[in-house]
Amino acid sequence: MKFSIWYNNDIKWFLDLIMKFKDNISSVYFSPPKNIALTLREETQDEKNHEKDIIKLIKTCNYYDIKSILLFNATSEWIKTWSIKNMLQKISYIKKMQKLWLTSISIYNMLHVPFIKKAIPDIEIYSSVNCEVKELEMARYMKNLWVDVITIPEWKNRDFKFINDLKSKLWIKVQVMLNEWCIRNCPFRAVHCDISSFTWEFDETGKNFNPDGLIPTHHCVAIFKKNKRHIFRSCFIRPEDIWFYEDKVDYFKIVTRDFDSKKIKIILNAYINKKFSWNLFDIVDFPIAPDWLSISYIDNDKLTELNFFENIQKCPWDCDTCNNCDKYFSEKIYKFR
Image (cartoon, rainbow, N blue to C red; front, side, top):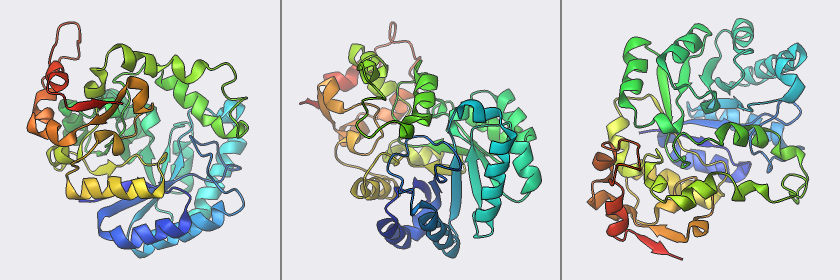
């Protein structure tokens, strides 16, 4: 089984990782230089050497028959969102990288897709997860706009009818996000993505980004704190449960862009082995520090013993009437900090 992983801007370490796990990596995704496009959460990018490093990355991926995916996933570029000049700059850059064997792009702004496809017909196009493709009708529009792969939002991961319809009715390839862990149908997601699109423009201290402390104390943190059942309602896919998706989707994306090199390796190994016997928090991209919930450890093996995957499929997504998650708390699968 193969997985898509994020390039963490540590070029030497990452090239070694590719060589070691080349048989288990389907694709590598990475951001363009900041002067080409805004990007989500790209504070660690080395502006001076970034392009030189991603050229090395693309060539290495090509050598091992691994897809290289350039991201244009910002949900807002302010006035540049509607700019023809901005679009042409992206097309020029994609062409430049394709000559060096770039295979694919992932994009949020559907205004640009027909023009990109016309200019570069053989580039493969993924819809960004931020497109929030949640209905078959929307996916059909995207296919008609020459999108090749639909990345479904993580909160649709357990909607198997939707996934099956994408495959059987549209005959389009599907990608799922494995270890994204936010609340299902998060009401703050759109705002979060817009803010993240501009995060790297703020100073390193973060003072200009969050001067009055509104974030993160008043977003989904408050919802998690109020109802800890949301921990289990979140539509992450554990390594032990990935077997159920193998014949249903085409690509599996591991969310690793906020993690250091050591953690990326741990997460990749967990999904390759389809097993992780320790703290579930260690392999998922949780939006807040676990200790803010007073919970520091969730026993992943215990979840397996309790048939977590089978039981969570029965969830009616209504915490006012359902007690399905209560068993996980009563079984003491967690530890308090």
